[in-house]
Length: 268
Image (cartoon, rainbow, N blue to C red; front, side, top):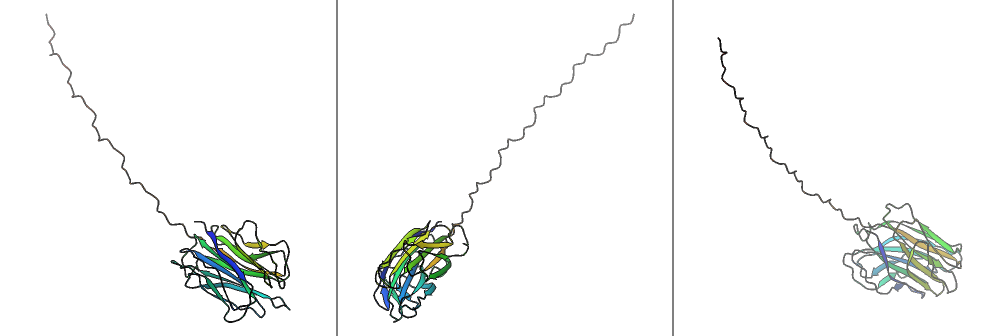
């Protein structure tokens, strides 16, 4: 069974705040939901927590910070997962525990056809990785290790970063990937985020823009496909070959030859 993907929402808020709220989402049953949060901060950034969105628990998968030395626009990416048998709906609250951020951007995507065993989507996330850059590149890659199965899928959410100024582009997805969600937060420091997906293996999750900015940050995941149900082979009942009853050969009754009575020779 192939994994399929769907964007539930993507957005951003450039105002100074210690919490942010996404649009309302309605996840499907037994679907893996991945949320990527990119936050900007004037102080060392804080790892957020999530609540809501119709999911009981959000589990952190990974986090990474990039430091722009001498500026007040450090960035952090944090990836979360959740999976529910009977999810509800609602907005997601991104909470930084009272520490004011200079803005946040996010993508929220769901995946069907995944391995739904484990706890809160743990079996569906085979591996993940994060990466960052502060040298100013026009393209960016997060590298994954060798995939555990040819049937597994690839996901990434990558963000382009500016340390000053507001106008920024939404990155273009890498070759072979399908774009899911995207947003550009045009309030300084600017952030443009793009999530992307492909249903097969790709160890280089990448995105690009026409004009390089100050840096990048992002996360990537190998998603495990659901095991195909085991099917027992159909076996036809054994049939014995039709055997005709044994027939004894027809035997004619033995007939004794006719013998004339012996005649004594005539003697003169």
